[in-house]
Amino acid sequence: MSEIKPDRHFKRVSDIPFKLLEEWGIKGILIDIDNTLASRDKEDFLPDALEWIKQVKKLGYKITVLSNGWARRVKRACQIIGVKQLLPAPILKPLVFGYKLGAKRLGVKVSECVMIGDQLSTDIKGAKKAGLKAILVDPVNPDSDLPWTKFRRRLSKEKK
Image 1 (spheres, rainbow, N blue to C red):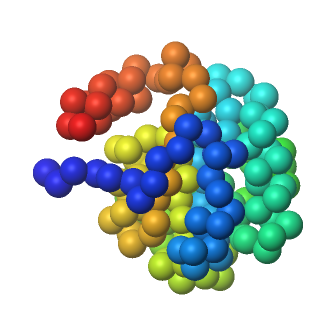
Image 2: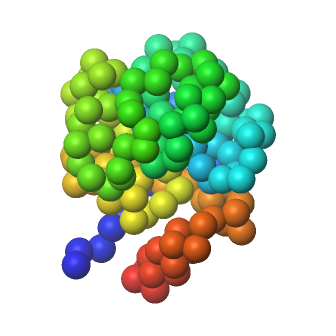
């Protein structure tokens, strides 16, 4: 199996420079929720991530949530970050169709879209297979991961 590598890696969403998105020709952003914007088990979203999203929207980027989370959580996340929910939940990452559908519903080419998430085995793997740029961020609270996510994270670390 080939190694899964993000195009870039940052500690937090708020560390992603807008200049990078511009350099890559990005027009659309797909973003994960759990352990990317908030702890998996909490409703409190990171204030700096919310501010980053606010700035991204102000700069004219199109953004929506791409998540394997429950429908209610995804709907609430879209309300909190102030974006339209364009995709069903759960979206079944890393299956490619969700990423391509996300780009289409944002009205951008796949090559103009980036996925931001905290998991190599879902967020990054699916994005790369679909032809998107992919940014990995450190998990907000890995202790809140479900058992299978903890297992996948361990497998990913062993491959590095």
